[in-house]
Every structure is written in structure tokens, then in C-alpha cells.
Length: 196
Ligand code: CUA
Image (cartoon, rainbow, N blue to C red; front, side, top):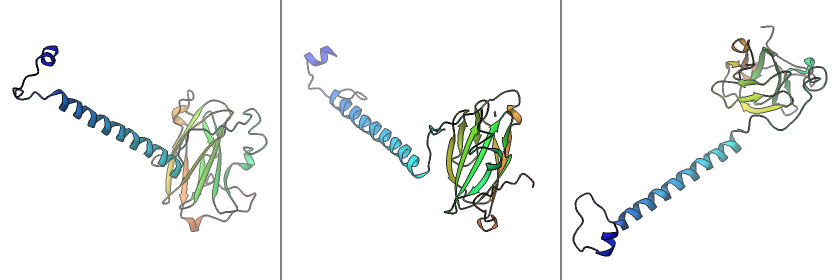
């Protein structure tokens, strides 16, 4: 290469060999393309975070795991689906070894839904296949995930975080009914499909 710089040859380059200027130009255009693609991917991540409510698995909202099932938001009588004044639904679920309480959550299609989950013992996972719902459920924290089910159906909700010997058997269901079939709930009323 040093030789080539010392004696620039006026002769055309052999077949298949390109000049340093062409190489530099090609490298530059690939660099621009790569930076462009990275920017695009980053924009997609930020865009879907804002529009599809994707966020890190647990908001930094803490709760005492020792007393959470006895009083407050995650007391047993407050679990299941609640209807907010604006018509949206909030489903509160507690995870423990090895069950979700309630084990069948009833929700309405085409309605904003907010899941609020906590664990009373170890780390569990909460996943609804084919939705944006996929979060770790960490003791001491409240995990919150927002979604909207486009159509009615039954969704399995397996625990997807290894939590002990019974992990493989820890799963429950979300039953999404058509919007008009979902009963209107009084402010303190909670709904589930555990009896079905
Ligand atoms: Cu709970 Cu795995």
C-alpha cells in the first residue's frame, strides 16, 4: 500500500480492485445507512413505548409483601376486576407459590384494561400470549400493565418466571367477553370468572 502511495500509477486498476476513494465512499454510505437504521429502530422502540404502553416490567411502586394480602389494595375482597368511573377496567391479581388469585380474570373486549399485580413470596411472571402483557411480578412491588383486548377470547396466563417446584403448574386464565356482555359493576363490586 505504501508503494502505491509513493508511486501513484496512472494505469487503470486490475479487474475487481477499486481505488481507495471508492472504498472510503462506500464505507461512508454504509455507515450512514447503519446510523439511519439504528435511529429508525430506536424511534420504533420509543414510538411503541408511548403508543402501545410498553414499559419496564414493574413501575417503581412499592408495597409491603407481608401485609399486602391482609389490608389495602390487594386484600382478598378487592381482587378481581373493578370498573372505574370512566368505564375502564382494573384487574388486581396476587401471585403466590403456586397460583394466581383469582385464577380466572374476567374482562371486556374493546375496553381499556389495567392490570395491577403483586407477589407475596417470590418473583413470578405474568404473560398473556399475543398481547403486550408480559411482566415480572416482584414481591414488594406493584407491577402495572395497560392493554386493550381487540376481541373476546380465553387467554392462558402462565407464570413465566421460574418460582419453585410447582412453577410448571402455575397458570390461570383471562376470559375476555364482548363489551355488551360485561356486567356493569358498582364502585365496590369485584368480578371474576372463578365460579364458571
Ligand atoms: Cu410462579 Cu413460576
